[in-house]
Length: 270
Figure 1: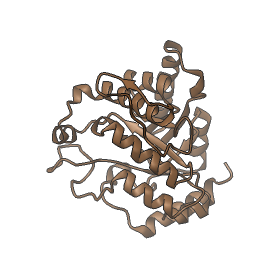
Figure 2: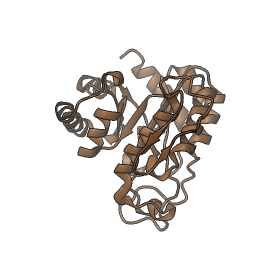
Figure 3: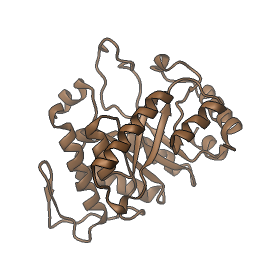
Figure 4: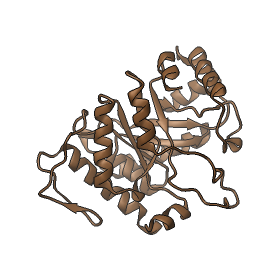
């Protein structure tokens, strides 16, 4: 599937992540507990080894549930395997069962996410890595190989809300919204603009790149409207033609290939 998408001209391939899923699923939760989600780093390493030009991206890693020193090593290695094609998408998570099973308090998720981003960037970019934060602290160490991309792979932060908006503006190269229709996208971008006015964005981060997984079926007019809102990248689900509420089971390979071909045929020239 990755090779098919690369040949079709796709710019990037995005993973999803849940380490565990609640069983039984709580009311309103869309994902079945038996959904077979590969570990993000393992899955993306396989894709990186079988492709050569398409970018690979985590969409998203639930950062507070990871050890940032170990994860920084894994992602630096992955960027090496991918020859500098990695995009690191991270988020703070929301599923109670995941936090409870790993022993991380949900009340700490925002602070841990910020802290861990700083720690990983120190390990990727500093000649003598040193970092001292509320949850992770180190000095007198080193970790090679460094990522191909310096000062590190671009970091994209997911979700919305004041804390995530502040994180996007002050700490990230990009922002990712999942399952958003046009009006929801418009509102999120307005909130990000308000955060831009409130917080200083470091010059080295450049312009904030906007990525969205759209809700519902697509056609050319809708794709153009996302672009006109300021969206840089649309990440399609494996069966973008299906209703979003039905997407809780694996999609047959043949359908995914059709989704790739349809997108290449309909949207390549936009």
